[in-house]
Amino acid sequence: MAETDHARLTPPEGATGVLVLGDGTLIWGRGFGAEGDAVGEVCFNTAMTGYQEVMTDPSYAGQIITFTFPHIGNVGTNAEDVEATNPHALGMVVREDVTDPANFRSSQHLDAWLKANGRIGVSGVDTRALTRAIRINGAPNGVIAHNAQGRFDIEALRRKAREWPGLEGMDLAKEVSATQTYKWSDGLWALGEGYDLDAAPADAPHVVAIDYGLKRNILRNLVAAGARVTVVPATASFDEVMAHRPDGVFLSNGPGDPAATGAYAVPVIRKLLDVGTPLFGICLGHQMLGLAVGAKTYKMHQGHRGANHPVKRTDDGQVEITSMNHGFAVDTDSLPANAEATHVSLFDGSLAGLRLTDKPAFSVQYHPEASPGPQDSHYLFEQFVAQLKAKA
Image (cartoon, helix red, strand yellow):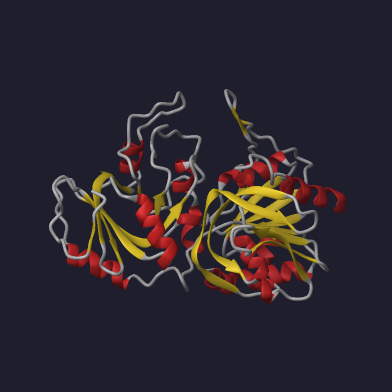
């Protein structure tokens, strides 16, 4: 089933799933989850755990995920390990067939969960070969398809993959953002206890989080660090943000091209900087802060997606093991004089964090809430909230 073939239009025996790349390549496998097809960017993620969190991360909107770890689905799914109400990744490509779950927290088989959420899976794929191809050639456009009878209109799927415009220039934050303002007060999760509900003190510093594609665990970490949180949509204006009288503003993660989202987000951030509002950004929020101060962003060759990315702090040389999920980055060489690099990727030297020297604003490209270290980067939330308490 791992066969990659440009010419074969008839599925090999037993094939009920296929990944069709933009160059016409066909990668056959066994379909699971929902039937149908979906088009997006094909990327890979090297994390060994957390597939449910990955699939529900809004930053993966518009993407089909190749998991390099071969055994995906073996711990099932549950209602707690999600980063958003619904999955945002379009589908998953895996090596081994999904087995019955073997975990006491599981409440649903991964196959059933994907079916219920309209997401497609293809197993039996040589994911090492696919990952190598992405590393060499960059992340391609592709269509993932599943049909229980093995019936596919290959030429139509090839055309769909070929004609999809790609993520460059695409604003997806509006599509995944909350459409209404809401308050968040729940803290972190503990085994046997669940989430620390309503953990935000009434007199805690008030953080307004701009939702470009928020992960829930970011909100939990802000609360755990001692903040109370109000979430506003990605398109909230400066006046709408300030109407909540924030002590600080958080700029969230999210999908798509930062330059496209920046068309409406950057003017708001610049006004927040002008009035001295403390800012903290993660992932897309980091890129938004970079654009707001005049830096440039660029599309990466393959992106960074995994839970094992080493990042060095420039001030003390300490290394954090981080979780990353981004296909765009801020160009270090384009940083203005009032912005300095605070973190650097040890994989490729790309910018992984910045701070302003004349404003109370900082950001990181990675995800400190994802706990791959496991707590190497939690200090960032504490640092931000401590800054707000000191200001008060």
